[in-house]
Image (cartoon, rainbow, N blue to C red; front, side, top):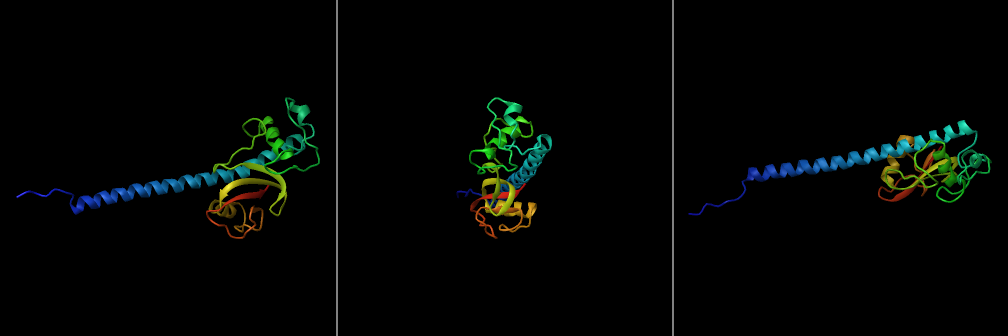
Length: 187
């Protein structure tokens, strides 16, 4: 008589437990990576605010709006008009773009030139004056999912996407979890 070969129920159960542990570890690892990215974005909002205010303390003018920047650094640096506002669209030309060159040449942020920095989810970081119903100087980060924005809103403000000092581009109270938004926070 020929003996049948194969796996026993115990062997199959052990394999399934191992697969379950591996999948659980991978999912937990992904969650930890997402949480780390959210923490970095939160730190970016705070760090950029600190850099802008440090520049204001040092040079008595907002970066990008600084009328003495070209004389101070030369080499293609463009001065602002000195009106006390960072002019232009967050991701357009003008003072909002020159701001990055001024911050970099002053040593307050890393990099070189007027290129927009990217946040940990891959979108750009910009600054402009008054957007999404937030008056004053505002930090804008584009291309982040609603679930990320909702967490950031709870950490940095009031959790309401259409109120307070942190808002989304759709001006909605609730966040669509998998929809990409731009988010803005008052400086």
